[in-house]
Amino acid sequence: MMKTEKRGKIRIMYEILKVIRKEPARKTKIVYTCNLNFRMLKEYMDNMEENKLLINNKGYSAKIEITEKGKKYMKNYDILNEGIIKTW
Image 1 (cartoon, helix red, strand yellow):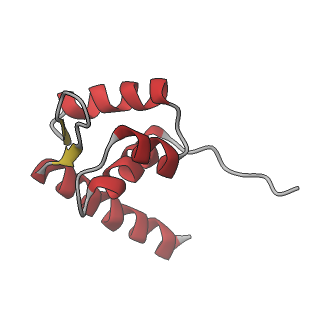
Image 2 (tube, helix red, strand yellow):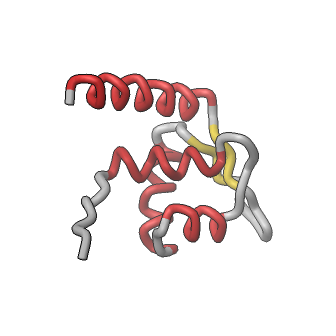
């Protein structure tokens, strides 16, 4: 059996943003794509909304949108991750 690495908070936040990068998505899509439960997603989304990485449109069939700051977060994550892979 292959051992899997535990994802850190920074990686999970990146994965959430990756889902909504091209188009806004509902919570259900994010939960299934990122392999989270709704309680965990709420915790991450509250933090990410507070830090202005995403916009949580409230109401029935509301969709989550990425902000410019969220796009910068993703770009910086990619740069950092690329640098780590090169030195590894």
